[in-house]
Image (tube, rainbow, N blue to C red; front, side):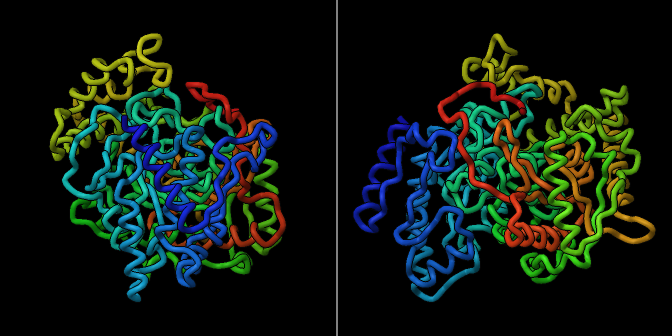
Length: 575
């Protein structure tokens, strides 16, 4: 019934759009002759405005000169969602109030009130970020359907204050990947399988899958996601967009369904650096409901002021932690990324190779991303997962205690629900349960077994995970007594964002290359120390400007929708 009502609403809204603003109908049925090309899902103009790939500044200019309104932007994005939703499932839920919100922002503009660069701009948030409205907040699980949150998440309230228009909730990997350790990335019981527009058969990145996919496929202007370990950087780089993962504590987690208070952070997605920075500027701030934010070190005036151009690269010095990370990238990625690195060097930057993470031989997994690598080495007291599974037990129980209209009060209740609803929630391992959750709910069970006890092993693991990674990054950023402007790393190598996640340090990823076989994008990322978002934004914007003005192919490209008729679950992990 919900889907039928949604389709009916879509049809009504689209008819209104066609009647009043003269939109041309997008091809709802993609043509076989356009298969595996960027023309497969052509995007209509929004009245006279070219919305596809439009930046927030371009949208603001169009609204300022009267060629488009916020309401029209919403209707055009609804049309795009209607066109693509059955293929990529990037939106988990649409906000029934979105038209009214857009109309209110349009009215303010007519009265001469423009709140800032996000005024009237549609956005989505991951479905683990609470909204106190007519939408659900469920982390993609049926277990929390109908539950009522006490308030907007702090980051949502900040975006509302900034005049942005909440379009809906993004699909995600259920419970932000905490519930299972062998699963189909981007899948949730409520949202189904989210798929990348570049290749619908393969891993779209996660757990903020829908946030990244929607921005990449031009379903929305910008989005929020969350990261505990890779869940912003990974989907951003795998969908050819910009992702900013802030220092833990820069963005409040109040109202966010938690995993680990030591590593959780709210990040931003945009098709360009400036769009992602506008979102970051809107959401950072001290929140009394998240004491980690009290440690913030934020420049006066925010972060947009640090946007720059390629000329700034003349004074930049970057390090390449080759043995720590680059050695694990495949040859095709190395070749394409090093082509971009050489372009950065030719623009005047200094590149220093072998600026390694201290003790990388011990703390960096040689076999790929592994958040229980300490236990793999025989030392659970040096494992990130030892910390996360205990934190989740305590943090999720606290979050659930603040909800109303639900019987879910503890992690025990969630586990029992998944068992009782095995056909949809996959509580048991395959071949029971469902193939999307091949290992059932082993992540939940590991957390449940911990009982949330913060014992000596827990505190040793916390100390080791944080100290070793922070020292490792900070040491790599200093060469011969000189501090580097950043570490350039290949974020498709999951160990990069894993080390940053344990440290609680920031990262930014830029679109950089595309795999020849799968057509999936990959990025070039910059790592820095705590509270160095100003530096990340300065250098990311400079590199992006270089990409856009140099004629290089190493930049964002539009998706070609490979495998658009395939519906495999689980998705292919990588190729």
